[in-house]
Length: 421
Image (cartoon, one colour):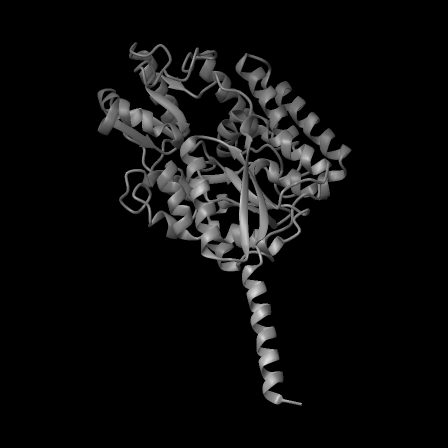
């Protein structure tokens, strides 16, 4: 036997195998995301291109689904067993989706260091396990004009010294009595749906109540209809009774038009406000109603479906998105708040000294997730109904009691959604 011939044969076989591997197409990772504004979509598409160019093992193929039909689309796909490998989801729906068996937990798939560096609003959990991760968030704030506050002897609230309940009530009374504002305060009661839990749930928490007992996630009695929740409900109703807010405003432009003195709104609105008022714009923390300032947390997150045939590839995509440079790129393109300190430092707006650094600090310090339970859909719908009844002058205790009954009935019907007392 000619050993040289054997060597050449082995070498040829190795070269052929290597060539075949090199020529093999990368594994396709199918991804869905909601179709939103142009800047965000462009930033997502750019991230896909960077990921695909960064390695040869996987190729992300992204499909856009209309936002209005997005949740229904992913629910239908889940029932049909046709979910993509990775998908983005509005964070509050994540626990329900995880409970239904549609998602895989990420603790074992993503590097622990990446999960650790995320602010709490960047991790969606169910029963202590992480099922989703998010690059960005938004922040609720009080917006006013420095000139208006100064004129009426009102201090600008700071992160170290937010308004107290007593102080804020006095501010609203002062502004109302000035005669300059028919309704001095705007809390967006023209909005509906998720705004009620996202916007008003934090007020409830700041009073010391909550939508559900987060020690066990099976009880609402005592937290949504207890003494502190009653104080919250009575205060919300007083805003209408005292004509501090317009119960049925025609739109949410009162502050921009100079008709409203203080607007409770999100960081997403700061662009228009800056255009309108420039350096006169005052960006302030939400009030401390007794249990500390609270704002809603949790925006659109990424998760991996159980149907994914290559979960390691999907995890590589999510891990790529969580790099500080990628989070910063999304933030710079969209003005959304980055969910890590390292990413914030790479942005113009949210780095230390950046013009919107306050929003990052509000999110980091005050944000609390909406209840991370599969019962959330019934919690938020029941809470919205109760709030509408209260704002319309209904009995506060009765309205909250009805919400508690609806929530606890749903949880009982679903055997606690995996939670126990």
